[in-house]
Length: 515
Ligand code: URA
Image (cartoon, rainbow, N blue to C red; front, top):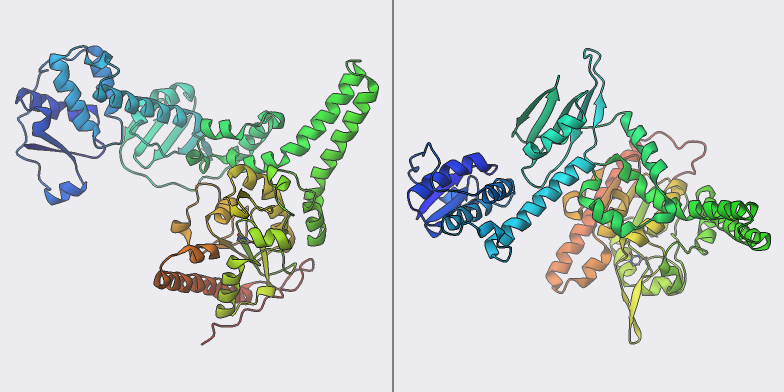
């Protein structure tokens, strides 16, 4: 058995030299182990077996389609690519038409990898966003971009960017290296980079452009997600607009419909009588939507919420469950959605999860009455099973539809700190790629979208743990995280400027942890 060690980012040329030597030594695919440096086994056997002597000229033969396929799959990030490529090379010595046999398992795997690489390259071309770097010393405009490709595609996409942006200097940074164009010269390296801070005026241009091409009457959120997968969203300036634009869509569609009815009547296409009714109905709907943004005060918000039909959940739930707590609360806690009991009472956190929350709040010395408690989604989502209503996690459509209400609650309450309970609440604030495990338990600074925030688990998670010992440990951890929130508020209160004239005094009381 021969072990061949390769760097994790080794592409076709590096692999080709070893493969040629292996082929010449007559090593069958089963006689070679292709290992990636840094991989687990490589740590056990850090040294490559005595290297095969390099072969200068080509050995064996390889058809053009086979060569193209191998060059492509060696850009894939799967470490298995080396062994697969060698198997195909080896077999193609006896079966020259192998790459044309679509049903062959090796070819099927290679074709799938090839498709994944092409898709990755397509996404990079479509979703990479340059930001301008102001540099008075340069006579050319300079741009910088950050992207996270899944595969080793920098070489493949470099010509596209070189041609498309030939009149500017640009630098694309990625975790697998960088490509740059300076005075028309393209350079590339494979030194991993970290995401830089990218903010500039170009973002404003993007926002205006994206808003102008967005047609609210043609929203297909599923298609939007498949064309622009969620994993790319975090690096795209325009995706920050999507929730607001989707939320605004109803209002804009209604306004468009009203206008259209008037225009059709003016052109004599529909009877004036019907046009008048249609326009009137659409206008009322548009006004209804506009009211949410203009709502002043939590009682007005709660009243408006009762008429909410932004998604289908209102058709099945008993009632809407608005947030509860003092306006001006220092601490806002956001859960997922009302449960069975909350749906019946119209108040958040009054069921089993609420009982856990109450217990822990008391334990850490936070008065429930001082907290503004609300949910990411304001109607109960469930499926009926016999006489029981089983909770269903809300989907992105419901979260997006409900987000203007939450945003308006945040704007009205103006909490100094938000605690999100569970992944759904976290993702509502931070976007769908946020992971609870990586942010849990520490206060993160404010962003343009929200005040400082701390993410922790949902109390219902503690109820679901089957093991009593584990449940106790997890509850203790939950309590520690709420203490962190409480302590942060206390220290921030000392540091914070006194409340402004438009801000009610903070009714929160956060004494120290009980002994
Ligand atoms: N779970 C939540 O997320 N919110 C509630 O109000 C009740 C249970």
